[in-house]
Image (cartoon, rainbow over all chains, first blue to last red):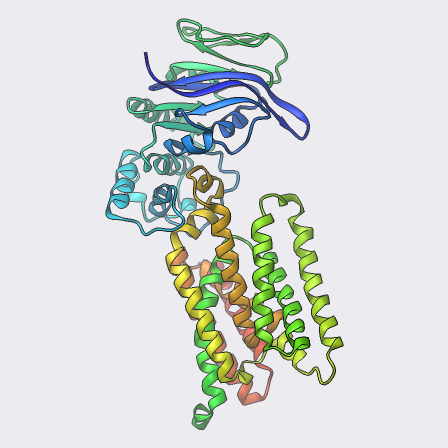
Length: 248
Length: 266
């Protein structure tokens, strides 16, 4: 049995007085590759930010690597939706990847080891030739690979990816997922994606978040179902049937 | 023409231009890439309150400016995350309160208040040896701290949320950064004054950004543009008996417009 790395127990989260998540539970184990799906505004991103300690639940308990999210999160490599990122920022790909080596530091100079870790991560993401470029000189897929490389350079044990296919050319979306499958041999991955069809081809489990519940469903056996509105996901036929309210 | 270089005040002006350019290039680049003009404006105008207080108490004016600008910079750094939606109003308030305090203190001080104009618009040709030492010390602090914290500043201003997930002390890093902005402002008060210094902190850096790929190169290029603007401004001001601050600012503006023109032709 694989070790448990993230445990979410009965958490609730409110935003501007409105319930965004209620009594949500989910467990993530080593080597898991979990896809999180659900409608817009259903709380997918919120759930990731709770795991990362960027938001605090009003109720319930989150454990990350046997610790609080604030302590455990340093073992997580995070790819956000880049809502705060200026792609015209004067910074090169290599400098961005090196940023993950600033972990726990007030200030530091990059060591030989840091530079090697960055090169390795760039190499894994096939970005070595791009390392001197600025973000706005790259394609959408390359940009996402830069941020995945940054996540990898800190040698994470869990990758948390929020909509990694955003602005990625449809023809190379498959390539990106194949890279993730490769990475999954070494680390657990949680990925949020609204493209359910693509997601279900590659991930091992799918969990659905829709405001009031999350249900994690294994491809072959139901891993856990909680909440009154259950979700059934069939592994062979990745078609999701929701009971209860769902805005597409 | 050559003999002006032998005047002490002129030499002081040249040294001050050189020192100020370095601080301006480094801190101005950060202000431009992080779009912090309003924060900079608020800190500089709150410094005027400190100037007024020093004036009233009979201290060296820049001492009060250092004190007030550091306090307002720390205040902004500490409330920044909590007051995200109200930042705009708070910064404008800080701006106006600083100016008001300064004016009241100056009004309360008996005697001639001719210096007031110098603090608002600066005059690099009036810099004395005491000012020069202060400018040198401030410059040294700004440059050394920026070198040590370069990677921290870059990481935090590029992607603050990520820095937080990596457990970097984001608020402390902002506190240090805003304090450097405050010190740069004090350094510039004598040179271009409170009202005009925002131009020196934004236009050369914005020009440099058009042609550079990394923050480091942007800082160096911005410093060079500031130096050229300051030196030519000082010369023109001396030759034509103009106030130097506005001339320097206009030259930086010409550089910026030229930069945009070159960039759009390419």
